Length: 171
Image 1: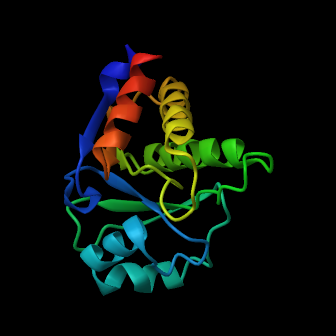
Image 2: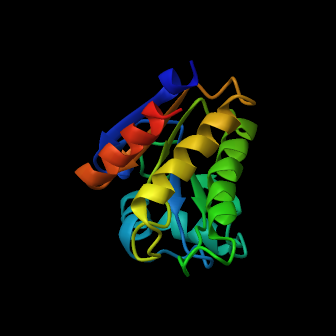
């Protein structure tokens, strides 16, 4: 069953020993607050130097770098949508973040990937709707990517953990 390939944890994504962690980045890829800032601080200056060469990243897309000082080999940077009420394509853009991140992970032979709850911080995406999109998109995409063995949803709060577990149980 596809849900057997999921793990949900509460913690710090920068500490996870996986092939790739996903960064909820901004379009500049130059670091910021929240998860993005934490990943840049933990990875060290090499990450910012490599990000400078990437030319940014549009919302819904993903780019990959080395992990530098992180336990993860790679950082996949994806830009989630800012919540504007749900009527300007936010659900499709959020789903695209998860799908494109997994496709990039598979392309780089990553078998373990960890995601934060993309767009649910300062971008304001409602956490319950975001968890449902994340889980459903990852489940659908994993069906096409058998070499990705495990996806971890690394949540900042206990509420986010519970929302992800509920979404997984609903598959």
